[in-house]
Image 1 (spheres, rainbow, N blue to C red):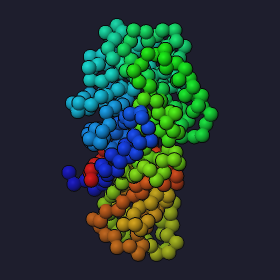
Image 2 (image 1 turned 90 degrees about the vertical axis):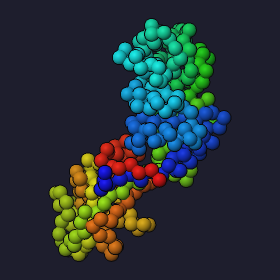
Image 3 (image 1 turned 90 degrees about the horizontal axis):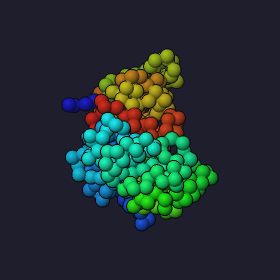
Image 4 (image 1 turned 180 degrees about the horizontal axis):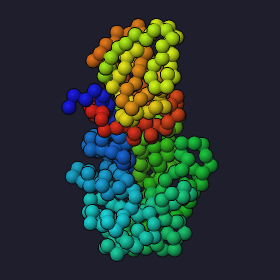
Length: 339
């Protein structure tokens, strides 16, 4: 289908980001979080490219995500554990067991290889360290003991506190590998890497800590086709609720892009489009299917394409949205074009 909006996806940048994170992981293996359909890029294509770069450990949220990737022949772990309804799918991936109930369910199903999440202070998913110390995992074949940092993108004392809890319970879990660091955790240094790191955001061009700036390359660029170029006289309004007024005669391009595609309303009069290296401001409200861009003095016509800021930190800052939300909110109407 000749879609009027697309995501230009840089496969080389994706692979290079993984290699950079692998180097920062030191002696630890570097895996990849590919949940939420590869953070919105398309999980199958992401897994194939990262596997080609050398990645061997992949993490998804649900068994439906695992099944969709099961024919690719890679190691998959399901972060949300195992419900009774998931047991028939157990051969596709390893569950990351998150509660005593899941541990018991897994034992009763035969107790094959599994991963285990331990809660070191985030109070989200995970078994309690005290339960592990009391023997909850005894007799299980635990491939990887996992925990998750709550504040790795900040210089928080909680990072070291969680690491200490994790280290303190590790021997009792009798796991083959230990894994604590996400993307921001990788940037905290090799003390947080243990045996396996699990980056997500940074693979896709996100920069959760300043240490990764200049290391991580943008991967995703939104491109949208111009539907109409129009002259807007001085004093005239653009878009819903007339939030932008032309200060003088301006030329505006209306493009095939809106919040139904995942280009957020938060970019209203704050977003940036590009023709080559020239930055152009979004003007007025972003609507469901349309966005207006001031193209005064630029050779842009109906049928041309505009690019929208591929630098995730730069896009996130004026919009007030997190880099994670900008990625995972990318809609299905985009054609996904790997280059």
